[in-house]
Structures are given as C-alpha cells and as structure tokens.
Length: 477
Image (cartoon, rainbow, N blue to C red; front, side):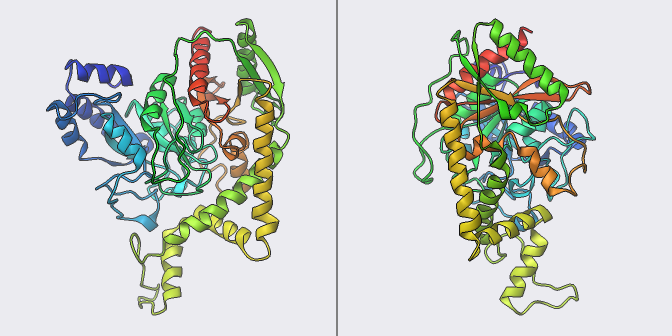
C-alpha cells in the first residue's frame, strides 16, 4: 500500500477497495518503523485515525485527496496540534486554528498523519538547525537531506506518505527535493495563502508540495490554491488542471550564469545529456542571461534577515511558548528587559540569532538605506532580468544546486559557505516566480541530482505541464 500513488489511494477509498482507516494505519505503522532512521518527523498526529474513520462513515465522500495521508512541515498551524517551527521558543504551543492551505487539503479529504522536521523557523539549508535534532538523508545517513523542508523531502523518499507539504523562502522545497530524489514545487508568490504559516520572511515565504511524481505534487498544489481574504498578498488567479499528456513544443532557456557556477561534473553531465535529448525531441534551446545572479545571495540574506528580525520580534515569552524567568544562579529575573533577553537567548538557536542580528542591523538607523533599501532595489533588477529572459523562452531549466547532498556538519562552522548553497535557487525566489525540482539522475555515489525548472509568474499550470513532459523524457532515456 505504501507504493500506491495519490490517485490510486483516492480511487481505492472511493470505490471501497480498502478503507481510509486501513490506509492511515498502514502509513502510520510505516512512519513508526522508518522515522528512527532519519528523524524526518517530529510528531505523529494521533487524531488522524478518527478522521479516517469519519471518511469511512461517509461524512466526507468526495475530494481530490480523499483518504490520502499527508505530512505537513512543522511551520503550518493545525488546530489542536502542537506547532513549533522546530524552535524551543514555541515549545508546547498548541494552535487554536488551522492554516488556510492545510484546511483546503482537509476539505479535499486529506488525512494529516504527521508533522515533519525542519530548520528552526525555516532558516537553514541542511535541516541541522532543529530543536528536535538534525534530520538525515534517507539515501545516505551520513549526509544532510537539505533544508529547510528536509523532513518533508525525506519522508516522501521513505514512503511515509505519498504527499508532503513544505515551504520555500529561498529554495527550501527545491533543494531538499533535489537532495532526496523527489519532486518539489514552489508556486508563484501569492498563489497560496500564507495565513497560518509561521512567518520567516513575509515577501518570500510560499507553501508548496513534495511527492514522487509531478502529477502527485500537482494534485496537492491545486488543492491548496485559492483566494483567502485573510492574506493581503494572496492573489486570485486561474490555475487550470495541467495536461499531463501534452505534446507541445517548447523554447527552453539555459541560464549561462548557472552553468558557470562551478557545477559538480556529474550534475553538468546529466544536464548536458538532457539538453541533447530536448534538442532531439525538436524543442528549441536558447541561452538566456540573468546578469545580476552574483548579487542574489547578499540581496536575499539582507531582505530575508530584515523581515525575520521584524517577524520574530513577537516571540517574547509573554503570550505563548517558552517563558524563562530563572537566572543561572537560581534567582528569578525582576526586570522586563532581562526577562526578554533570557527567554530569547535560550529559546532561539544560533542560526536564528545570527539572522535576527543581521536583520536588525540592516534595518537600524543609518544603515536602512545603505543595506535594506539597496537590496530591495537590486531585487527588482533580478526580477527584470527574468522578465527579459522569458521574452526568449517559455521555461528555464538548470541545476538546483552546484553539488549533491553534503556531509552532516560539513558546513555548520562556516555560515557563508552554507549560504552559498542557495546560489541557484535564490534568484527565482527573489523574483517571486514558480519553480520546481525534478529528479534528474544520480552522481557516482548514487546521490540524487535535481533539475530546476523556472517559469513566468502565474504560469504554474504551464510549468507543471512542461515538467510532466520532461519527466516522461527522462523516463524514456
């Protein structure tokens, strides 16, 4: 049963070939068996069996995800469940409401079976910054699964669920999908409501899906898209069901800057083989330029850290989460400022503190214009680069990362080296574009290599159609 696709589970439950409870119990048992290997999950949803029974009782009879087990990243609020963004500062916080996009999944019949591990507050590229301990790559346990949605990617790769939800701020769906050999989709910024998603950087955060195939990831994505008046950045647009048998011919863009970024040889070889296959199919391949690529990392880490500094100021220990009032000497604090300092020092991890400090500095008097405003201006130039590029092509393909999954603890002591890992995913995030990672092949160590696809804004459905065509092309190789 764990090998069944999203569609097969939904059809089996509809036709009563098996019950939703049987499906749910099978996946829960598999989660319990597999999770100790990678630590991909932080908690199991004990309410999931009751929901499955309600489906079997006929209280919900239709939906694109009827009876389908789904794993949700720990930064999406789910009513009645603990939601912590894998941070000590939100310890024991039980959400009083459900995130809009998760509610949409449940309306389509999905069963939330577990919550997945992640970098604290989605700040990281390796899933090593979690209050629940690091997550391991399911293919090689000595390596990272990628971040920040590493737990979701690892869970799909381990067949703990056919569909998982992640969030992508600067590559947090695409990079772990690439490292774990699954498909991950980040839609256009604004396509999915951010209501109920714990904020990191509000102008960049976007929910998305992970699955084994393009079609399965697309079904989950389509369920989450919808207009929500609770999120001012949510945009109403027409997402047409993709044609997964499309025979369209495409103009495919290749970003020169991405191929000049020191790619691992196997990654470069796999991409060149695909390009050759694309040309043999009769699609046109054109070279495009994103000249401001070199500025993407500093721009991203200024904009994202500044927004994080603002968003995380709400965690003060007064209203919810961790509240530390006792000093090291056992005495209670008696000043409010000392209380804030103690709670936040003990509640936030090192990487989160680093980004809060960077963001607070960037927003401070005398530096705001010099850093934050300047970064926003260059961000606009990067968006314009993509607009120009799409005048020459329909979609852009390239690598997700310069190399496959790196070793655990390899980059922890060098934050700049860790940040460079986002070099190829950050530009499209800054531009707010839909993009995704598709399994491309493996390197000599059998580690997965991902193919990145980038498309024009709000052409998510067309991107998925193109990805399905590429997926078929790769299968035929």
